[in-house]
Image (tube, rainbow, N blue to C red; front, side, top):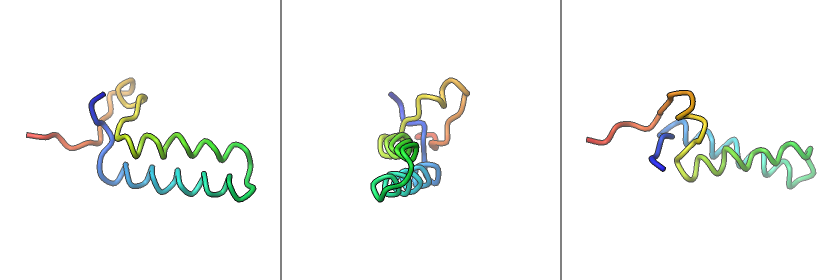
Length: 62
């Protein structure tokens, strides 16, 4: 797996993921557990959907 999530995209995924998981833990709706997906992709740095869409937000390394 090559990293394809970079910079701001990664930070936003982690923040949104943490917020949704925290909401679920505090008694929010069950669907809030979906926050685990952006949290995981932000921490790992790889999104499996990006290659399917031909996207890459990670800066190229020289």
